[in-house]
Image 1 (tube, rainbow, N blue to C red):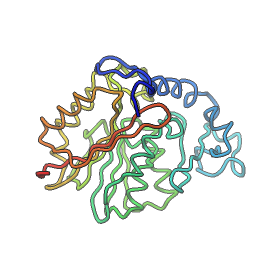
Image 2 (tube, rainbow, N blue to C red):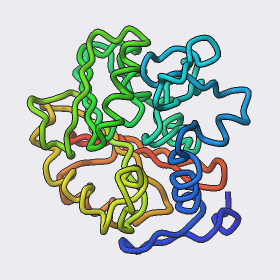
Image 3 (cartoon, helix red, strand yellow):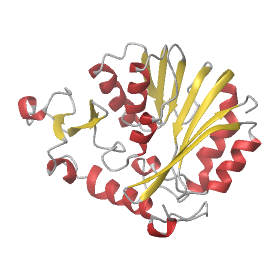
Length: 267
């Protein structure tokens, strides 16, 4: 699809442009941060059902004024995922769906997700047969959200905890994943760290450290976009000693998502 029809993109690490950036900030301001209620899209949609953030039960049967927050359910590939306020929502960003659609074989493997958000990717990894699933996020609300979804879908092999990148992670994994922020502008708050990374500092740190958490012959699955600084990402991949085994790219809803399947093996 011609890029000219998709809107302006940027290659600068300090700028934030293009349709996904606008969607990022709009959803963060108008959707997730609406006080006392779920996103406007949630309330107006028949596909998203508000639920109680404390109990995880459907609000139509269990919501009461005692629930200080509202959340909602979002169906993703057959699973009704809980989305809490203050957590980056797959309702406004199809990259998580793209990630799950193209998840590598994880059966019997140890799986680590950086930046787990709602936990949708980790839940699907567990259901695909991963032996162990570790999901981390710098946002405590995201960790709570992931734990709720682990409980909802009976994920017994999973654990979720707060970590800024690899900061609190120990051990090595067969698969390390991160659906990374695409834009290099400063985030306004914790929520916007889900879509923007100032000068790509966290991404630079990820590639500087990921090898220490990867088992021999392990795989890194890294999500990005042509809307970001793609030449930088390709350089970081190469400089870190990885080879691209598989690269996927797609345009939907006016913006691009990419997946890099990386290995240290010769390809």
